[in-house]
Figure 1: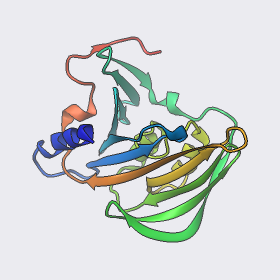
Figure 2 (figure 1 turned 135 degrees about the vertical axis):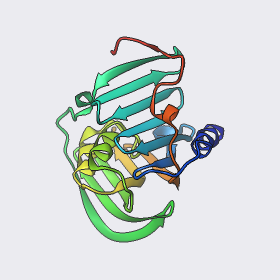
Figure 3 (figure 1 turned 90 degrees about the vertical axis):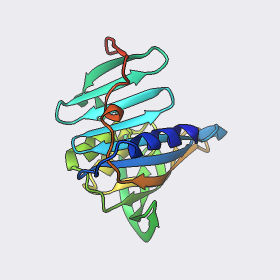
Figure 4 (figure 1 turned 135 degrees about the horizontal axis):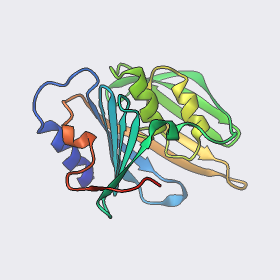
Amino acid sequence: MRRSIVCLGSVLSAGGVAAAGDYSFVQRVQPAGGAFPFEEMAYFREDKAARESGRSRFVVDVKEKTLTTANRDSETYSVLPLEALRRTGSGTATLEPTGKKEKIAGHKAREYTIAGDRVSGTIWLGYGFDIPAGTREWALRAGAVGPKVPAPELTEAIVKQQKGMPLRSSVTMASGATGLTTATEVLVVHDAAVADDLLAPPKGFKKAAAK
Protein backbone atom coordinates (compact mmCIF):
# COMPACT_ATOMS: atom_id res chain seq x y z
CA MET A 1 0.00 0.00 0.00
CA ARG A 2 2.91 2.36 0.77
CA ARG A 3 4.00 2.55 -2.89
CA SER A 4 0.50 3.51 -4.06
CA ILE A 5 0.21 6.27 -1.44
CA VAL A 6 3.59 7.72 -2.40
CA CYS A 7 2.80 7.71 -6.12
CA LEU A 8 -0.64 9.22 -5.66
CA GLY A 9 0.89 11.86 -3.42
CA SER A 10 3.20 12.84 -6.27
CA VAL A 11 0.17 13.42 -8.45
CA LEU A 12 -1.59 15.56 -5.86
CA SER A 13 1.49 17.65 -5.16
CA ALA A 14 1.85 18.52 -8.84
CA GLY A 15 -0.72 21.29 -8.45
CA GLY A 16 -2.87 22.85 -11.14
CA VAL A 17 -6.12 21.74 -12.68
CA ALA A 18 -6.35 18.42 -14.46
CA ALA A 19 -6.55 18.65 -18.23
CA ALA A 20 -8.97 16.50 -20.20
CA GLY A 21 -7.88 12.91 -19.82
CA ASP A 22 -5.83 13.35 -16.62
CA TYR A 23 -6.48 10.34 -14.34
CA SER A 24 -4.65 8.27 -11.75
CA PHE A 25 -5.77 4.72 -10.96
CA VAL A 26 -4.86 2.58 -7.95
CA GLN A 27 -5.39 -1.07 -8.88
CA ARG A 28 -5.20 -4.10 -6.59
CA VAL A 29 -4.10 -7.39 -8.13
CA GLN A 30 -4.62 -10.85 -6.66
CA PRO A 31 -2.32 -13.14 -8.67
CA ALA A 32 -3.22 -16.74 -9.43
CA GLY A 33 -1.88 -19.56 -7.32
CA GLY A 34 -2.24 -17.90 -3.92
CA ALA A 35 0.58 -15.37 -4.39
CA PHE A 36 0.48 -12.23 -2.26
CA PRO A 37 -1.73 -9.43 -3.64
CA PHE A 38 -0.10 -6.16 -4.67
CA GLU A 39 -1.08 -2.68 -5.81
CA GLU A 40 0.03 -0.73 -8.85
CA MET A 41 -0.58 2.72 -10.30
CA ALA A 42 -1.74 3.80 -13.76
CA TYR A 43 -1.65 7.34 -15.12
CA PHE A 44 -3.39 8.90 -18.13
CA ARG A 45 -2.89 12.29 -19.76
CA GLU A 46 -4.05 13.07 -23.28
CA ASP A 47 -1.75 11.01 -25.56
CA LYS A 48 0.30 9.38 -22.78
CA ALA A 49 -0.28 6.59 -20.25
CA ALA A 50 1.97 4.93 -17.70
CA ARG A 51 1.96 1.99 -15.29
CA GLU A 52 4.05 1.87 -12.13
CA SER A 53 4.34 -1.72 -10.94
CA GLY A 54 6.95 -2.95 -8.50
CA ARG A 55 10.38 -2.52 -10.03
CA SER A 56 9.16 -1.39 -13.47
CA ARG A 57 7.53 1.58 -15.13
CA PHE A 58 5.92 1.40 -18.57
CA VAL A 59 5.13 4.57 -20.55
CA VAL A 60 2.96 4.64 -23.66
CA ASP A 61 3.39 7.67 -25.92
CA VAL A 62 0.73 7.61 -28.62
CA LYS A 63 2.04 10.74 -30.36
CA GLU A 64 5.58 9.35 -30.65
CA LYS A 65 4.26 5.79 -31.12
CA THR A 66 6.64 4.37 -28.52
CA LEU A 67 6.60 2.10 -25.46
CA THR A 68 9.26 2.92 -22.87
CA THR A 69 10.14 0.35 -20.21
CA ALA A 70 12.16 1.43 -17.16
CA ASN A 71 13.85 -1.07 -14.84
CA ARG A 72 14.52 0.15 -11.29
CA ASP A 73 17.00 -2.62 -10.50
CA SER A 74 19.38 -1.67 -13.31
CA GLU A 75 18.27 1.99 -13.47
CA THR A 76 17.96 1.71 -17.24
CA TYR A 77 15.19 2.17 -19.79
CA SER A 78 14.55 0.93 -23.31
CA VAL A 79 12.22 2.05 -26.09
CA LEU A 80 10.18 -0.05 -28.51
CA PRO A 81 7.61 0.88 -31.20
CA LEU A 82 4.00 0.60 -30.05
CA GLU A 83 3.37 -1.95 -32.77
CA ALA A 84 5.33 -4.43 -30.64
CA LEU A 85 2.24 -4.56 -28.38
CA ARG A 86 -0.09 -5.87 -31.06
CA ARG A 87 -1.68 -9.25 -30.49
CA THR A 88 0.24 -12.44 -31.14
CA GLY A 89 -1.16 -15.94 -30.88
CA SER A 90 -4.19 -17.74 -32.21
CA GLY A 91 -6.58 -17.69 -29.25
CA THR A 92 -10.01 -16.04 -29.39
CA ALA A 93 -12.11 -14.27 -26.76
CA THR A 94 -15.43 -12.43 -26.68
CA LEU A 95 -17.28 -10.24 -24.18
CA GLU A 96 -21.04 -10.55 -23.63
CA PRO A 97 -22.99 -8.09 -21.40
CA THR A 98 -24.76 -9.65 -18.43
CA GLY A 99 -27.02 -6.67 -17.79
CA LYS A 100 -25.56 -6.07 -14.32
CA LYS A 101 -24.54 -2.52 -13.40
CA GLU A 102 -22.94 -0.89 -10.34
CA LYS A 103 -20.51 1.83 -9.34
CA ILE A 104 -16.84 0.97 -8.94
CA ALA A 105 -14.35 3.61 -7.72
CA GLY A 106 -17.03 6.24 -8.29
CA HIS A 107 -17.74 5.30 -11.92
CA LYS A 108 -20.72 3.55 -13.46
CA ALA A 109 -19.71 0.10 -14.67
CA ARG A 110 -21.25 -2.78 -16.60
CA GLU A 111 -20.44 -6.47 -16.25
CA TYR A 112 -19.42 -8.69 -19.17
CA THR A 113 -18.89 -12.44 -19.37
CA ILE A 114 -15.57 -13.55 -20.87
CA ALA A 115 -15.59 -16.57 -23.16
CA GLY A 116 -12.58 -17.83 -25.07
CA ASP A 117 -10.35 -20.71 -26.06
CA ARG A 118 -8.05 -20.16 -23.08
CA VAL A 119 -9.85 -17.64 -20.85
CA SER A 120 -13.16 -17.37 -18.99
CA GLY A 121 -14.60 -15.22 -16.22
CA THR A 122 -16.07 -11.74 -15.84
CA ILE A 123 -14.96 -8.15 -16.35
CA TRP A 124 -16.54 -4.83 -15.39
CA LEU A 125 -15.98 -1.88 -17.75
CA GLY A 126 -16.36 1.62 -16.30
CA TYR A 127 -17.57 4.67 -18.17
CA GLY A 128 -17.36 8.46 -17.94
CA PHE A 129 -13.62 8.75 -18.61
CA ASP A 130 -12.38 11.53 -20.88
CA ILE A 131 -9.51 9.48 -22.29
CA PRO A 132 -8.76 9.69 -26.05
CA ALA A 133 -9.56 6.49 -27.94
CA GLY A 134 -5.99 5.97 -29.14
CA THR A 135 -4.56 6.39 -25.65
CA ARG A 136 -7.10 3.95 -24.22
CA GLU A 137 -6.35 1.39 -26.94
CA TRP A 138 -2.58 1.32 -26.51
CA ALA A 139 -2.73 1.64 -22.72
CA LEU A 140 -4.88 -1.49 -22.63
CA ARG A 141 -2.40 -3.36 -24.79
CA ALA A 142 0.40 -2.24 -22.47
CA GLY A 143 -1.55 -3.55 -19.47
CA ALA A 144 -1.83 -0.15 -17.76
CA VAL A 145 -5.07 -1.37 -16.17
CA GLY A 146 -7.13 -4.51 -16.57
CA PRO A 147 -6.61 -8.27 -16.27
CA LYS A 148 -3.05 -9.38 -15.55
CA VAL A 149 -3.13 -12.53 -17.66
CA PRO A 150 -1.03 -13.48 -20.72
CA ALA A 151 -3.97 -13.49 -23.12
CA PRO A 152 -3.65 -10.83 -25.87
CA GLU A 153 -6.95 -12.03 -27.34
CA LEU A 154 -8.75 -10.82 -24.19
CA THR A 155 -7.09 -7.41 -24.48
CA GLU A 156 -8.22 -7.15 -28.09
CA ALA A 157 -11.79 -8.05 -27.06
CA ILE A 158 -11.73 -5.19 -24.54
CA VAL A 159 -10.30 -2.79 -27.14
CA LYS A 160 -13.15 -3.66 -29.51
CA GLN A 161 -15.70 -2.41 -26.97
CA GLN A 162 -14.57 1.07 -28.10
CA LYS A 163 -15.42 2.59 -24.70
CA GLY A 164 -15.00 1.53 -21.11
CA MET A 165 -12.02 1.07 -18.82
CA PRO A 166 -11.50 -2.23 -16.95
CA LEU A 167 -12.32 -1.60 -13.28
CA ARG A 168 -12.76 -5.15 -11.98
CA SER A 169 -12.07 -8.61 -13.38
CA SER A 170 -11.81 -12.26 -12.47
CA VAL A 171 -10.13 -14.21 -15.24
CA THR A 172 -9.35 -17.92 -15.33
CA MET A 173 -6.64 -19.14 -17.68
CA ALA A 174 -6.88 -22.75 -18.81
CA SER A 175 -4.27 -24.83 -17.00
CA GLY A 176 -4.83 -28.54 -16.49
CA ALA A 177 -8.18 -29.60 -15.07
CA THR A 178 -8.85 -26.50 -12.93
CA GLY A 179 -7.22 -23.40 -14.39
CA LEU A 180 -5.61 -20.42 -12.68
CA THR A 181 -7.64 -17.36 -11.66
CA THR A 182 -6.33 -13.80 -11.39
CA ALA A 183 -8.48 -11.02 -9.92
CA THR A 184 -8.06 -7.24 -10.30
CA GLU A 185 -9.98 -4.24 -9.02
CA VAL A 186 -9.48 -0.48 -9.32
CA LEU A 187 -9.75 0.93 -5.79
CA VAL A 188 -9.38 4.65 -6.48
CA VAL A 189 -9.72 6.90 -9.53
CA HIS A 190 -8.36 10.42 -9.08
CA ASP A 191 -8.77 13.18 -11.67
CA ALA A 192 -5.97 15.50 -10.57
CA ALA A 193 -3.25 16.77 -12.90
CA VAL A 194 -0.60 14.11 -13.56
CA ALA A 195 3.01 15.22 -13.03
CA ASP A 196 5.36 15.16 -16.03
CA ASP A 197 7.92 12.95 -14.29
CA LEU A 198 5.38 10.12 -13.90
CA LEU A 199 5.03 9.91 -17.68
CA ALA A 200 8.73 9.45 -18.45
CA PRO A 201 11.62 7.25 -17.29
CA PRO A 202 12.80 8.14 -13.75
CA LYS A 203 15.47 10.83 -13.70
CA GLY A 204 19.02 9.55 -13.93
CA PHE A 205 18.14 6.29 -15.70
CA LYS A 206 20.33 5.41 -18.69
CA LYS A 207 19.03 4.25 -22.05
CA ALA A 208 19.74 0.62 -22.93
CA ALA A 209 19.16 -1.47 -26.03
CA ALA A 210 15.63 -2.90 -26.25
CA LYS A 211 15.32 -6.67 -26.03
